[in-house]
Image 1 (cartoon, rainbow, N blue to C red):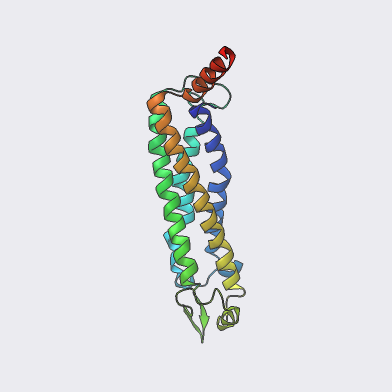
Image 2: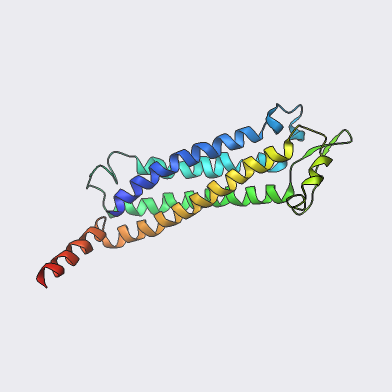
Length: 201
């Protein structure tokens, strides 16, 4: 596969991940699936917008690159040259930073735990992830309903998707370097040489 084709396919793969990350962050603005009475009642890490800015907007720039019609096409567009692959490194680098940001924010949020209602006040009842292995501690939250499950589920999804995006963007950085240095279809050239050598035997 040409390195340009890989960039195209990678962009398509990242689209659903970026959309899901965006939606997860939006849902976290509604603790327990219900509108918050006050913005201060929402977990602080939600306002860092890891899923919207990180895994969403910053990663989506790579999907735009991968789906441009004049560059890096999976459909056989061979006009993708070293300039395109060089820019793909920059886009992938930005996506890598965004996905890494989302991953870190999600990890901190899971360790920190949700902000929930205790004795009429919204506060953080958990420290250093102690609630993760002790489900009986979840009863300390008087509300919103199922806030711990809501918090863990959505931030865990963001954590996993951020990790997948980090890996994919990292692959694209390497792929872009190969395409920039050796040309878009360097791998196909190697395959052709390999077949030629086989025929000569």
